[in-house]
Length: 534
Image (tube, rainbow, N blue to C red; front, side, top):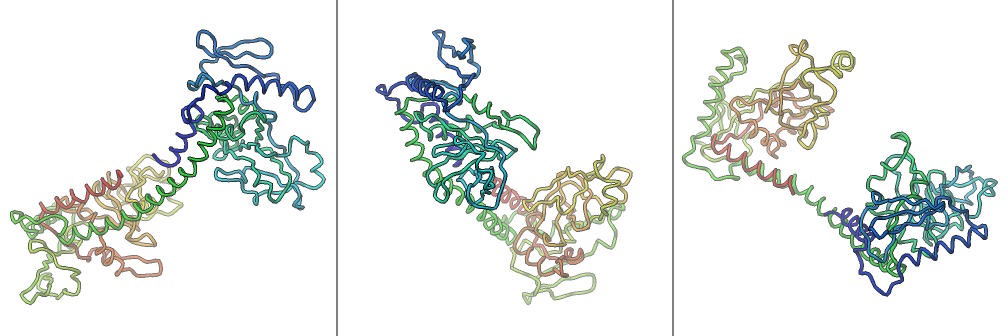
């Protein structure tokens, strides 16, 4: 459970009567509501508030159903509206019936003199009210505000317009008045002023509860970009009202727990950050151990990697015979360690000392080889923006993957709106399913890499690695190892930073025996899966 979920649970328990125990000595909520009705009647008589024609009384009948009785005598069963059961000493009531004032602010006329600040939606955030973001009313316009329109201590304000901000709820406390004596709200903010007999802080926490906040946009009207939370909707909210003393206990309990929740959330965030930062480091360490033959034990019964090399050579010759691979791409390169402990590469009749290229020692049954020996490596095709819009946008065909579609998280966005219809496929290189795409040019060169789950066409800044004998996943992990990254970065040239396809092909790769290679891949897969599921 994260911090937000915990806070939501606390608030939900609070408004359901499950956070603090009930006290049989508490005066029931029904008495409180009678007092509020009497108080409102007095204020109406004195002309201080207007009579609410929709005022009602909610009660539970002898049949255990909930009924709502209106001022005109009409009675309606509201069982379907009741969200949950409440203690016997509690009552349901409409929010408007326990408020002395519930209205939107008014559209202001702004001025330059900093006399009367106007609280807008941008000022009202979950964590606090940002008074420094207030604009100010024109001096002459101040006179147009009625007394009840000025914000008071204990008022609750609700953002009431626009997706993403609607429902955001704030509380007007003493600190708001540190710099200014008076405030007003603009027309996109609703002011909720509960009766003084009700705990304003209880109503505030009620409005923050998941019962209100979850699905709040569904209660709104208007278009997607300009939704409105109407005052009538807010006024009609069903409020579970505890006895006065229990309201105080609930508020005290909630407000003693929320700082703990905040600290918990912060600690959790720190832990998540630590885990997210540790994962890449641990992964790199594991990958380095893997390619050095230190992740899984060697098995003396495994056929040496030289056998795997021979299988790769035979597969390449078969592809040449079938016309699927050019003969020039079959280069017999043999890398071995001489009696003088130096490493040599035999290419035809040429023998080259490559000791300086070898980054570390490998087990005796492993071999060094070049990436070009184990995989078919090639770049894709570029498409101009004109062509892209005219021929390849929102059409049926094979997905076209560009650099932007390969994420730093090793994932690919396939359905990006760009595809190559069958009639144009012969103009494009195709990267087959299970092959690897890696960016080799620009700021993301060597950093964006992913395995394909289907055949795709792809861009010219991406390089495809397609293994000859089904060792794609081992190559995929090798391309993310610190050793490969160092070699790749060491070959970067140009202002924007890139590695030529020829240089990529020439990068060394340590090759284990086939059975050990498979054990390595399984081990890394297990680690990655376990880390992702944490």
